[in-house]
Image (cartoon, rainbow, N blue to C red):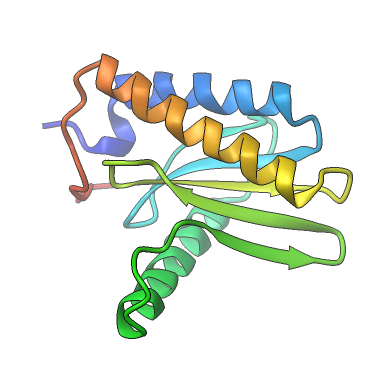
Length: 144
């Protein structure tokens, strides 16, 4: 069985969704589709190579936010925002899948547009994965 981060259908769907995100949000610096356990599926632009650090941090931040939500009994974590002086990072789970979108925007994008564009991206990705009958719903990739 192919791990989620190596599945050609997931890679193709992820690339399509991230490319569309980049087209509707030109201030996107980097977007990455990451598994719950920190494996990168695909990122755009392809010219950026961060050695997997962004994927690893994404997975850790997601796990921490979900633990906080659970411990405080405030419901499911909808999204994560890291706002900084020179940009902001948004993280959203792909509905029904063990995948996370992490997107870095520069300061030329409003937080509202970045969030709206990112939500559209994860919804598109969930639809593409459903279309491909991808069934690894909230499973985990176990090999590298």
